[in-house]
Image (cartoon, rainbow, N blue to C red; front, side):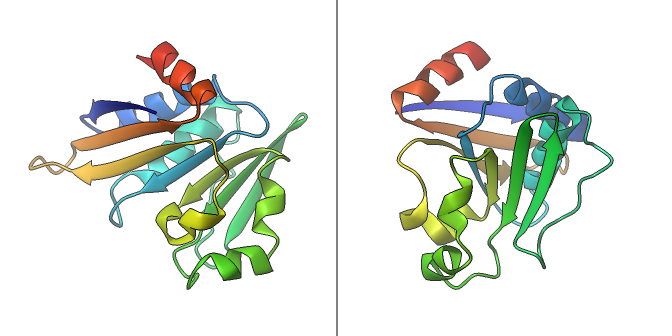
Length: 153
């Protein structure tokens, strides 16, 4: 497990970090994004999708639980599990079957903590005193992601 803190001073920096992070992601990778409403989770996801040329496709999956984006042979699954009671509802929709089939981005992932794969990256967003600044606390779970964080910094 490795932990790093990143400061994003505005939405553009969050988007840029998302694009950079996306350049290291592959099928089977999972990102868990946590933080208050409006803290930057969807903006980071937009940055990831921008890397793949899918920036015009993004929509919040709040009411559908998961949105699927496809670019060439890469599938990106963007989950918003805010409305789920717990991981049993995630299992009921076959959520765990997505993990190996593409890149999974899970907003509000703390709700389904026990359903998450063993290895993933957790990014916890915090607001700062400045309205636009966000603190991204990034934690890797698994050696593969320890190495990825080393490359990112």
